[in-house]
Length: 248
Ligand SMILES: C[S@@+](CC[C@H](N)C(=O)[O-])C[C@H]1O[C@@H](n2cnc3c(N)ncnc32)[C@H](O)[C@@H]1O
Image 1: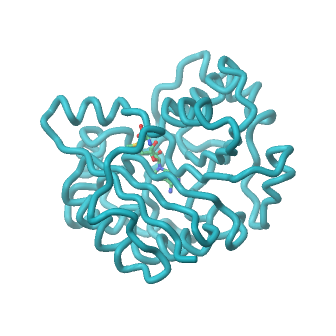
Image 2: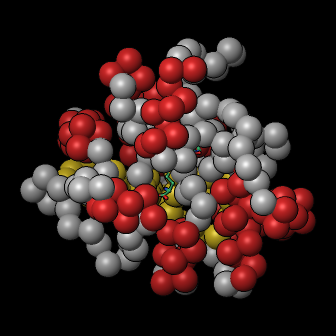
């Protein structure tokens, strides 16, 4: 794959915006939540990409993915959208060995980094798809098949005219809700208050979902504090978690 990274933190995102005004991607039915651009990839990440991608990844194809075949076992499967450098994915997969984690990310260095973590921690319960998560959810994930969805610190696209690039939008949440089994969950976290408010409105407006809390949820023990979060907290930002369940 020749994907290059999208924004990795709010500052970088903010810097990109002046140069890269959002426009619909040619040939794409949806506005992408990331931009392709060159970025630094370490030699080790590149080696991991070259050598380990075939071992731990599934290529994007516009056809339903057989999860049992992909993981070599039948287990509850959680889709993680935009895993970044994969620290959280690794920690959660280590803490929940009984569950499968399907991580979707477009960013080369991040995919390389998670591949390294999978090998170092000898994890068997992670698979990666390096592709746009909107297309993966739409084309590869069967309805009523996921135990949960994780969307942690998605790119905030802070400028009003770029809000259309945000991942958490009614149509995408409706799609994700249809991929989750009844009783399964969707867990989002952000350190951007305005995006948190959008998440409450969008998830709260999806009729097939119900909030597990009054408003925001406390950070569940299984979600470790990410580096974005640590940085945000240091800058005095808040962090907001939301956990909704699909109605039975
Ligand atoms: C701000 S980073 C957060 C990374 C990580 N979740 C964390 O908390 O550290 C957002 C990530 O989402 C990825 N991303 C954005 N849109 C995506 C999409 N449509 N499909 C897959 N990954 C996407 C970006 O490449 C980026 O790595």
